[in-house]
Image (cartoon, rainbow, N blue to C red; front, side):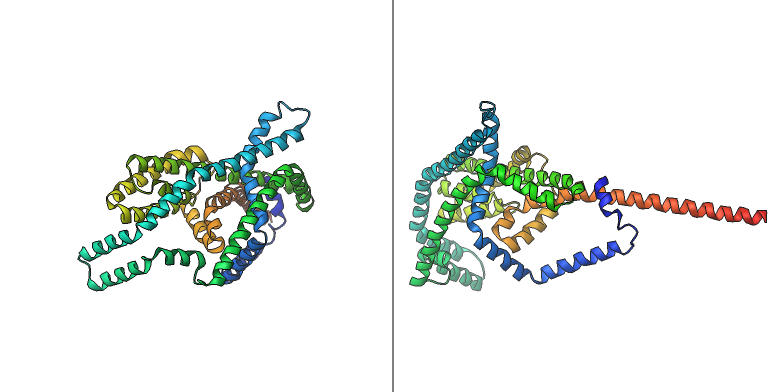
Length: 408
């Protein structure tokens, strides 16, 4: 707190400094909002260029906690060769996570394909049942006609899939472009995994290089404070990613057990959708529940209400029991701040912005509580003390003048 006070003490004498800084922040914010399209385009271009490196870095960052855990156990047995212990830990953790992902895909892929195939084969029948349900209601005829037209537009599964995959470019050129993009994406992912291995192996040297760089760039008296902030950031992000993945897996498994026990259709597919949507904060679970509810409504409507009731109960348990135990107090942030970051992050970065809304809000909350509040408190205290001193001096001076007049 003292260091941050020292950092801004040279501005205390200038009464216009705070106003100038505030105006500059407002102008910069206005320019960013006014040119949000250009900002978004810049970030999209940057992500496209560095996508392979980002894949590798994200995968390495996700695997790193497991590698550190294995390393802490292994270095006790290999005291004389800690570098070899880290290489073994990084290799084992990376192979384990890849094997786990591949194993889950091999286990779930046949069931997912079977669910999707059965849904596709029965789609026309589901649509006919939905048409009959709409026609049997007492809605206005114009509303019925609009709903029927919408259903007819969605009845062709092939057209829906082609539009979803290819957009409006349903031509041979579009198909070739999509195939090329798919192959390039798979190749980039493979290269990203290889880069993740090198990131993990070279983690120690990379950290040393970055530490040296920031030590040279950041003033020495502020380096320790910046390092503490970075350690907190890293703790929040790593804990959020690991705990969010664990939470999504738990929710998906529990949802699958319930649907299998109730003999609901498309249990594997719906559980996969629920787990995937649960990664997105706040609105994600509701989106997953809506998608699965529509699928059940088309297939077997009698299961919709039990599924939605169970989903509501599961999300309450997840929000008040599972997540607090996983995350602890590290990510307690105001709800309005999360909503702001959801909207802004989604507008600028899309899905990644939505997924990272909570940790970004947690970091901002940490900066406010641990940095801004202490500095503002110290600044206010210093100003109050200065005002009291000035006031006491003025009173003493006035008293001295009064006494001098009396003597005269």
